[in-house]
Figure 1 (cartoon, rainbow, N blue to C red):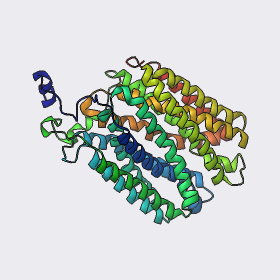
Figure 2 (tube, rainbow, N blue to C red; figure 1 turned 90 degrees about the horizontal axis):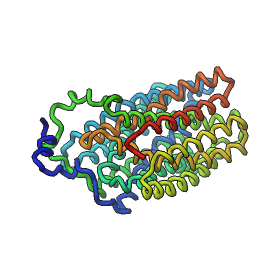
Figure 3 (tube, rainbow, N blue to C red; figure 1 turned 180 degrees about the vertical axis):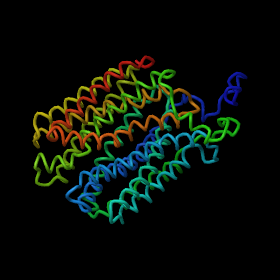
Figure 4 (cartoon, rainbow, N blue to C red; figure 1 turned 120 degrees about the vertical axis):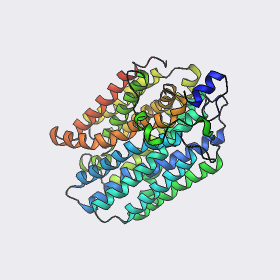
Length: 423
C-alpha cells in the first residue's frame, strides 16, 4: 500500500497537487495558459504548414512530398514517446518549483534548440534531427501544459478553459503563418523567431503562475524506470478512457489528412497564384470561425453539463467541410470549407479536454495519462503522411485525401457515443 492509499484510508487530506481542484481559476491564469499554448502551437505549426514544406522543396524539389513526409513522420514518432514519458516524470517530480513547471521550461528549451538546428540544416538528415528535437521538447511541454487543466481547473469550468486552449491551437497556426510569411520572411529567421516565442512563453508561465509541490511522501513508489509499464492504460479496465482516446485520435487523423498538404493543395490542385498568401487567408477565416465556435460551445457545455452532443455536431461540420473539397477543388470551395472546418474544430476543442480529463483513471497519474492522450495528437502526424502518400498515388489525388479525412472524422463521432461516464 503506497502513501496515497494510506492517507486516504487514514482520512488524511491529499496535498493540493493530487486533490481535485474546487476553486475556479482566475482570468489572469487562463490568459497566461492561453498565451503559452499559443507559443507552443505556433512553434509546431509554423514549421509544419510553411517552413518544413519550403525547406523540403529547397533541398529536393522533385521529391518534396517524400522529404516532408519523412521528416514530419520521424518527428511525430519521437513525440509519441516524449509525451507520456515526460508526463510520467512530471507526475513523480517533487521539485520545490513544482511538478510541471521545470519540465515545461526544459521542453521549451530543447524545442528551441531543435528549431535553431533547423535554421542551419543543409541536408535532409540534419533537418530530420532538428525536427525530432523540436518534437521531443515541445511534446513534453504539451504534456505538462495539458496536465495544468485537471491540476488547477474545476470540472464545472473546464469546457470554457478548454475552449481557450483550443483557440490557442488555432491562433498558433494563424499567428505562425503570419510570423513566417509576413513578419520574418527568411527560412532561418522564421525558425529562430518560433524558438524565441515558445521559450519566452514557457518562462513567463513558469514564473508567473503557481505549481503545487508534490510532497516526497506522496510520490509513487518505485523507480521511474519501473513505472514505464504504467504507460499502458488497459481499455478493458478503463473503457471510457479508451473510447475518448480513440475519438481524439480520429479527429486528429481527419484534421491531419485535411490540412497537412494544404500548401501543396493550393498550388497543385487549386492553382492559386500565391499559395502562401492563400494559406494565410484560409487560416484567418478558419481562426475566426474556430474562436466563435469554441467560446460559444464552452459556455453552453459548462452551463448544461453536456459534452457528447457537441462532439457529434463538430464531427458533422468537419466532415461536411472535407466533403465540400471532394466535390469542388476550387478557391471558392476552399473559402467556404475553411470557416466550416473552423466552427467544427472549435466546437470539438471546447469540450474535448473536458471529456478527456473527466475520464482519467487516477489523479496521481494525470500527467502520464494526459501524455497518453497527447499521443492521439502526435500519432496522426506519423500515420497521415504515410496514408496520404498511398491515397494520393492510388486514388488520383486530393479528392481521395479529403474523403479519407471526412471518413475518419465521422468514425470519431461513433466512438464518442460509447463513453458512458460523461453526458
